[in-house]
Structures are given as structure tokens and as C-alpha cells.
Image 1 (cartoon, helix red, strand yellow):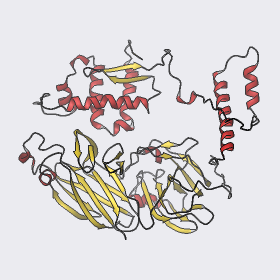
Image 2 (spheres, rainbow, N blue to C red):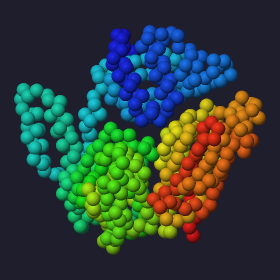
Image 3 (tube, rainbow, N blue to C red):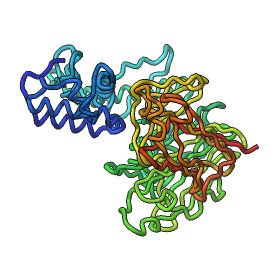
Length: 525
């Protein structure tokens, strides 16, 4: 890799805009502000003027009396920015020919061209091939139509070595080898189809006797996807009828997983999902992305959803349930089981305009209980000291995730590195029942200079649940006895509203509200 010797400001600006618009940087506003600031200095030929003080005052809005020897925020945030850029170019931006990094000493941005060790531009990610060998004694499959012709074309004397032909042949042979291996070991391939009339044979065998669950992204092509919590979603499968759609470019509220709501299936359709007998928890994911932001959008689509022939969501209206269009909406059901034939059958029948679905999750459940909901106000998921899994922030609207200057060490939880702040709310989907609600807080700013008394009363906010007051005038600093100390507020027998959600609002009274995490536990006996 080498730093470009020739300034190409239009390309550099274009790369910067792509990076700033990417999900990892949208979710890290402080890092995005620093990156934009130092790059603008670079474009203005003022990179030599970038100093710790100027970043603090001009990018992070610190007071003019900022003293770097007393406040390490710039050093901490730039260190995180270096790591953030590295992760970005190892994942989302891996194929970008022009990339950005921050000098290892100082704060200058560097634009460089990514190359392979041989000095050639890296190939797109889809151009590799796999070398798969069937086990000894595996039956030899005959070549499908087209393979022998492609091979003959490549083996003709004097034929030019076509890269695209080799790529096509490599992938075709890989597919043949993979099918051979699956046939030998007796694994049943998941049937997938992009056609609207795909049908699943009734004799399709169920998965093994144990399963971690199944997550299906409706309308997705042949490649599985991974969500922000690290979970894998299968491409669309097990469906009959309807048509796949792709609707990118819309910002969907209440989720970091934008891609989940960019594809879907609509029309009149059904799913027959093979499952071992047992108890499951069903999550259905929707977002209304076809009607504009206009009055009356919540009356334009209605459809019925049934499970194994039993009504589940009669006359369901996505926009009405979510509270508007372009909002992620999730419906949750506990105590779900497949039929006697080993299939969980879901039917989506239009009433007014076409039925619509974005995703299905079927998770191993506990009879009579909803699985715990654990939300960490962070862009990343986390296992706490007790091995409990806390998913990255979701179900939120308003506010933003801010990074802590130093991690908060909590003896019961582990460490917190970020929090949600601002004027925000959550709409947490739950099944019918009663729940224990646990909220975790810490004061991230006031009192950090050692003068705790001056910070008491500087941050006050109210908390509401389904329109009723839970806490009035919460002063986290006063209650905790100091900054960076975790406190908890716990409430029992909390019930969902008519839409099956626990609606939480965090309303500022003086300065912004703050929150570290939310836990919802089923209290039904």
C-alpha cells in the first residue's frame, strides 16, 4: 500500500463522503466529526495546523480554555478513529481502491491506494474460486450441461485465457463438488428460489433434532447476511407465492440493521419452515416502505397473518402498528410450535393491497416465557460478566449513541463504553404478559472534574412508560454519588400497550437524558 503522490481532491472527497455516510460512522458521530475536520484541513493544504487543541475546540466543541494535559478526549477519540477506519476497510470498505488512514503520529489524514502484495489492484470480492475435493470414495457426478462446453472452450489450442470464463467454470465446478459432498454426507440442501411461484416439497425433511433457530431475510438472493449483533440470516427460502422486492435508499427508524428492511416479499404468499418438535419464539419483521410520508398512509395496506391455520394478526396494518412509514416494526409471539407434519406454516393473505414481510426469526423458546430482551446502548453487542448476551442498540428513536471518554467498570456487568443521550424513546416489542423492566444509568459528563457538588442538579430528566410516569426529575449524579457510577431503576409488572410494545420515553428537564442499557424479563408464572 502506498500514499498517493498526486493530489486528487475530487476522488478523495468522494471517498470521505462514502465513509461518513456508512453505517459504522453514522453510528459514531464524534469520530465522524473528527475525520471530517482533519480531512477538510487536508483539502485546504492546512494539515500542518492540525493540533490536539484545534480538534478539541473546532471539532469537538470544547471550550477555548481546553487544556490537553488535563483532558485526554482527543487522544482517546483519535485512537478509536484509527481502529474504526481499520475495521471499516477490513469489512464494508475492503474493495475501495482509495482508502483513508490517520498517521500513526500526529493527526494528519492520509489517502492511499490499496494494492495486493504484487502491486496489482485487488480483485473484487466475488472473483475468487474454491478448491474443493470430495472425500475418498465419493461418487463422481456427471458434468451438468454447459460445464463440458466451457471446459472445451478453455482447452482449445491457442484459445486466449479468458478470466471471466475461468471464473464461471470455477464457480460451476465448485457448485458441482459441493453438491457431491452434500449428497455423500446426507445433508439436505435448503431449497431457494427467486421465482414468485417457488414451492417447497411436502416431503422436505426437517432439520436435526436440535437447532439454534432459523432467521430468514425475505426477498434476499442466494447469499446469507449478517446483522449488527453477529447473527446470520438465511437468504429467502421455504416460501410459496408472492414476489421478492428490493427497496434500498430509505432510512428506516428504530434499527441499526438497515439492510434487513431493504428486501422483502409481498403479495399473497406462505412459508413452510421445517422444525424439530418443540417450543419456539416467533419474530416477524416489517417496515412500510412503499407509501409516502402522508396522512392516511396507515390505512393503505391490510392483510391477515395465520400460523398453522390459526389467525395470528388479523387485518394487520404495518404503518398503523409501527406509528408511521419507514419505521421498523417487530411482532413477537411465544409458545409457538410446528404442526404434526414438522412444519411451521405461516400464511400472509392480502385484504387491502398486497401483504408485505421483511424477515422471520424462529428461536428456541421456553414454554410460557418470553426470552429476555437485553439492549446495550452501543453500536456493538456484548457478553457481560455472567455470560448474558446484550444486543446492540435497537427499537430506539431520537437521541444518539455517544462514546465515553473512559470505560465505566461495573462489578456486576463488566464495562460500558458508550451511552444513548438526547431526547429519545424506545418501542420494545413483547408478547402478552407482565415484565420486569430494568434500566441502567451513569453520569458521563458532570462531576468528572472532581467537583461533584457543582454537577448535582445539572442533569434532570423524566422517564415514562406507555404514557405513565416512572421517574420524575432523575438526577443520576446525585443518586449515584458521583460520575461514572452505575445505578439501576427496576419496575415490576409492566404490561405492553395495545400494539404489543413497551413504550419508554426519556424526556430532558435540564440537559439531555442518558441511558446505558435496558433489560426486559418475563414475570409471568
